[in-house]
Length: 165
View 1 (cartoon, rainbow, N blue to C red):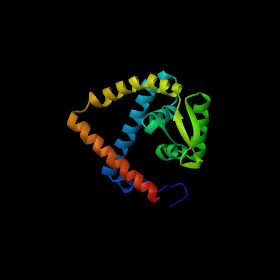
View 2 (cartoon, rainbow, N blue to C red; view 1 turned 120 degrees about the vertical axis):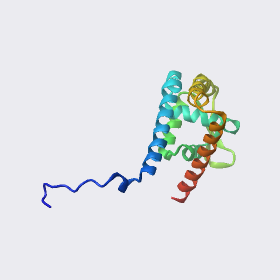
View 3 (tube, rainbow, N blue to C red; view 1 turned 120 degrees about the horizontal axis):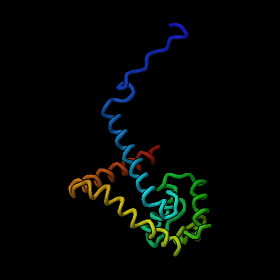
View 4 (cartoon, helix red, strand yellow; view 1 turned 180 degrees about the vertical axis):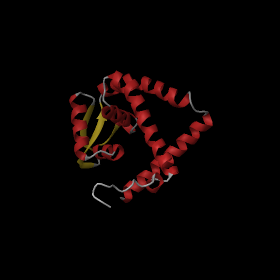
């Protein structure tokens, strides 16, 4: 073979068997499109960025509307530096407050402020509308139950894989 010749590209199924490629593409496409729909139709009109909206949702659904800073990174798959910047920005905007963790003096507990709750309330109805349109208007009750069960199993397995890495 001369230097001007190239090796033929490997057959597609040599890299990804068709069933894996289809599964991967479907998962990535669904994740991308759902996130884009939520961002464009719920988060952006409320004047928030996706990371801040995610933070507010996680805090709002946590006990006492607060969690440890390190848990934010674990749940959102963010580095400590990125979490710190996100919290700095959200705190500067008055959306969250960092407090000493009552169980670990080295850690911080992050809680929603009244302004943070109000910001979450601005996008929550729009988020519900998007989810209604994507899920409740598209899938039957049985399909929704199956979807939730499958997504929970995938999330649980992914958590185990991340812990093993």
